[in-house]
Image (cartoon, rainbow over all chains, first blue to last red; front, side, top):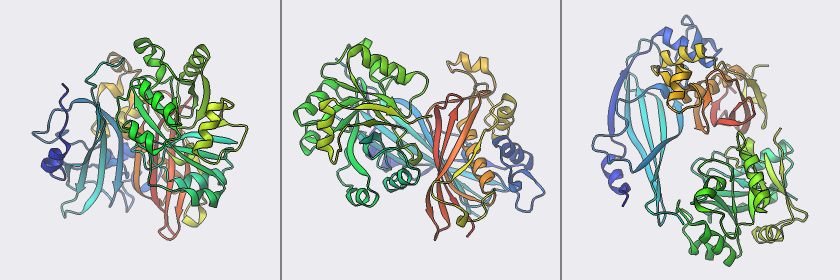
Length: 153
Length: 209
Length: 137
């Protein structure tokens, strides 16, 4: 038998609880390289002398947590596929500002059928500045197709 | 009448299009279709009523579903309450034979979609499971196809004697109508769509450049 | 002409097509800046050994291209959200082009929604997404 994830238990034990914290600090060169490689032309992303110089709005998507899933998270019963990314910038990320990225399991749900399931998980990193101002959220969506337990005809 | 037989709205997990915006897009951009069928993944949307939108824009909006079988994904047209009782639309390992049989029994039509696509298309599973019974129509133009997926679908349809439909498989507004199906008569509801599909008088078309 | 106000925008408006730089040197520059430096993004041979068709353009770079395209169209645009679905990989050194169209306008809120599609040279969709953007009144 294939082990299946207990969604209720996961929601109770893991949902909305930070399981990872990582620190970041951007340099002007890093921001310019990132922005120019993306093809940004707006000077607030490409010119460190610009009074509103800041990281491009999708930068938070590149921040990776130290752990993919919380400690003690059940073993995934199938192949996890990256189903997409969403990023929501809330306030500018500036160079030289210590940033902290806290990650939690933001949503998990299953589409259950008689003989198999797909589990959808969204992990969210929230990026804060030292004043705890939320600068951005970055979501990663993972779909797990639980392996079929029966042999098809 | 031209209908895009394969679209998704925000009701699908990976859909990003609002139905109203599909309608606005079709009218504003003169997309050469008269309507579309919402085929949400692994579900039938019993809640939404698009009649008012359809009237406002003069567009036919019908509902179907896209379910998952061992042969890949399958569009279901003519979903009824009884059909929803017959099998679980959210099951990702439905036996195609059962889907086809239940559709037949409950006045619906099952159409394997993007059959040339690896893993989720019917062609990839023929060698393992053989040619399935009861399939008469497959999607031969899919707006999301890449490489030679549509060519594989068309060759398979020709070899096995299947009729072909077209659908955009749109998940965002601007992709609606990329592929569609032309019918000789007007279709106003799901029953008429089933009737037209069963009559076999239709033609898959592509509007992709 | 660059868009400076939501009043300049109509439903269905097309953003100028953007052909981003997917060349190896540019991707290397990006992954180093992003902290994603690895052979699957910077070495075709190593990527092929992993069973990939070639070195991959990271999904987060695709997302960055989309944001850049919006700023090229409306330099003062404030991006609220970019949501991307990766349908198939973009390969380093293979050209691609991005199209964008306005699919919703809320003039009161100063907000527009944009559909974005990245296609390869054969016109196949590799990445698509939507963006919510605030524009000056």
